[in-house]
Image 1 (tube, rainbow, N blue to C red):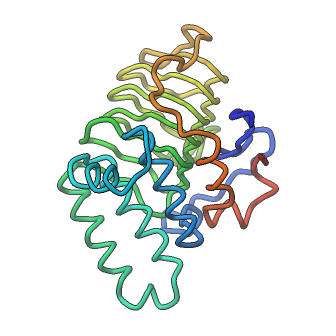
Image 2: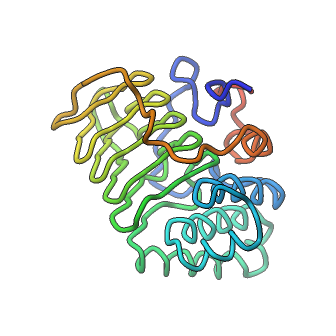
Length: 245
């Protein structure tokens, strides 16, 4: 399987602008318990290099990034349940908010995030809910993915597969960041970044086309990604807007 065609982030040439609601939505919510497990397995592989009960318990207990991811995706799955899962969704949401304030993660449970998310360290992760993340993305502490309220780049970022975002990087507005791009520490990105583009500075400028090679650890393998096909509510509802496998 060609990982460049997995389609966990919308193709900029095909995607239609999504309206910013300023309110929670359902696009990033896992559609079933089986898909929730598939997403968490791909995420776990990024941290542990394997998928097992022991690895899950270890990283849920001791790795803030993975623990938050588990709570976030679980709350998103329960959000789709009838009557908000008979009280389980409010509990999951409370646990998620508790983890948010403890670890400094502000990532909504309804945000579209592909499999294989890796949150390096903790503290200062602030992502707008309309942002879209592809698969096997590495994000370091202090990253802001924000919404632009006006102008030609009004909207939220779309981050391609296997992209690296360095510590303190800011991507603001309807920015398209291509697959395998690398964004340097403290960079402020205000323009689109091509596939394999390396950018840095304030405002960020294109520095090379060497991409994220060497910065993405333990890619989730094809079989784990394949199990995540159609996992999110938005992917099911908007198939024409996304790449196919």
